[in-house]
Image (tube, rainbow, N blue to C red; front, side, top):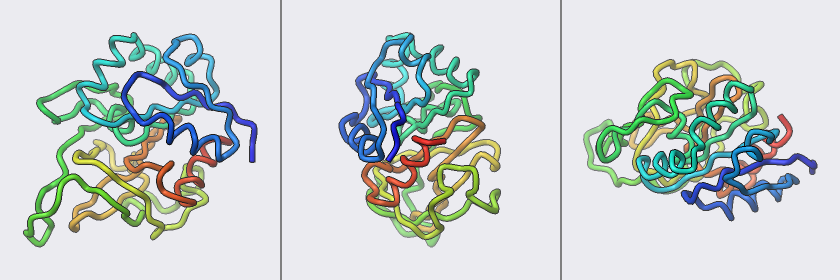
Length: 215
């Protein structure tokens, strides 16, 4: 256990309670806030999110938090986006029309293909457990949030859209859904995004949160 403090951005979009409980289980002291000064003074920040991309961006803009999050990136504050929070890190999303994102990681959010690679119709959203694998651009998970994890461990997903980073080097881990590669974790410098819910992924997810709490 550790005594880390983690600030979770509370902007009205996301299941904060499950994220809070997961972090607290890992020994962190959790602060839920949308106060700019508290967020900027944080040692580690989590951006959660569920629902529609455009609604989430509108909520961040209405609370004047977009510039705050950009400042976190400049300050090299560890920032973890979870589920929709990960997608917001990219430049734009195709969900319900094109919406600009935070632009912290170059790339676009697109719909998960509704057909498998073999041509069969597949269920959307992608709900359930999928096994993590190393992205083609990486040879090791050392010095990432997956350092304590192994390929093949499964995590829990609930999503209809997926992140496509422009630079393959920003893809840390993928999963396969219907044979299609889906980015599971993306990262750029101090910024990491998990498409899955680590707080709902049992001990596998808790290892990831624990690593974030001490990095």
